[in-house]
Amino acid sequence: MPPRSLAGKNLLGQAATSPDRIVQLMKSQGITPAKPAALIVGPTPPPYNGMSIANEFVQSSVRDAVRVIHLDIADRRGLANVGRLDLTNIVLAAAHGVKCVWLLLKEKPEVVYVPIAQAWLPFLRDCLFLVPARIARRRVIVHLHGNYFNRFYRQTPGVMRAIIRYALGRASIAIVLGKSGSGLFDGILPAQRIRIVPNGIPDYFQDGTARTGGVQKPVLLYLGLLSANKGTLHLLQALAAIKQEFPEARTIFAGEWASGKEKLAAGRIIEEFGLASIVEFVGPVGLDQKLELFRNADVFVFPSADEGHPYAILEAMSAGLPIVSTNIACIPETVEDGKSGFLTEPGDVDGLVDRVGRLLRDGALRGRMGTEARKRFLEEYTLDRYAERMNSVFAEALRKTG
Image 1 (tube, helix red, strand yellow):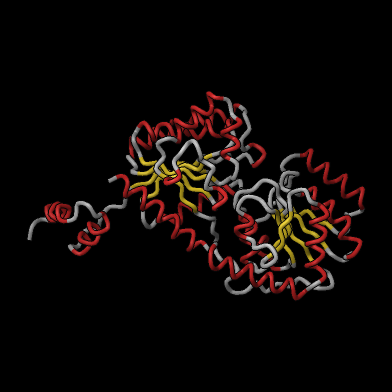
Image 2 (image 1 turned 180 degrees about the vertical axis):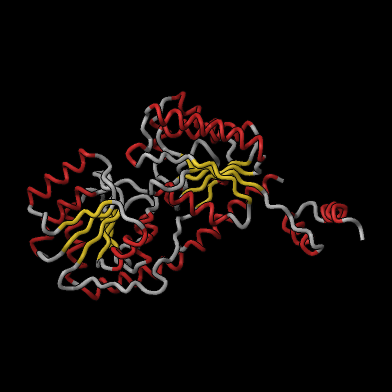
């Protein structure tokens, strides 16, 4: 029998055009093939936000298939500093860019994964990773977690558009969150390089939600960044009308305020309409507290005007809650209007009052919609489904490395 190294060469000769076949043959000869390396750029918590959570899920999903090299770009100072132009962020960006170049030279990853921003300053930071990867001729996977990249591209000055085209033009694959995002790279990347990968999360309620939310004192839950753009102020305005018919209904807001100005605006609404006795702001919450909030809620309300594919909605679906949200981005692909929840237009306060009122009046409707929401979650949005889709994308990129 030839030496193991020589056997490996013979096997490569037998199956030069089939990487999967190569792996099978090597394993049959007792040879453990080395995992290909993937440089994964992105933040990890804290602070907890969609991007840091998403990056953790990406790493856990592909770790069995590739050797993960992680470049952590988190700013630990808190959400208020994300995307800001200050000296600390400039220093952090420069340090992360230098480390990216060092990792490309030292580790020689076959694939580089970069979640990209859709604003000019954060995107320039992303170029510190995209451009070196292009120069090093690495296969690049870009991942867009928002839903208005095409608008950002069209509205940006010509020089910036040229930078975007150069940084992204050689990307092997661009991941978007849903069908609504299929055209977000028009004019930058050909359609055949776009792949749809909806978000997915662990099934935190696989043993049952055991909700204790009561019919007599129903609980509405909002969970996410507290800001005007996320619909927080519109929800408070809707509660002024909801209170007239359902004076016992409570609303819990969980999350961090985007700014002190918006917190003050919310305080003025609460004072004007006398909402202090029916609203509670619990601040940012950890996983255990968050799950308890879901267990004790009756309806999840998320009237945001700026989303991609929000994790909070998937968590509420996992908990078997009916959803009231907005008809934007990937939300209509996730929440089936009239089946697993209700959708309104952003800023439609009257629509919020109507949809929430329907659910509070009809316990059977809440139950049916909650059941449908959990069913859809199990079919499409578990972490296993997400991992399956992400591994397919990484495998495709690795095949392209040849």
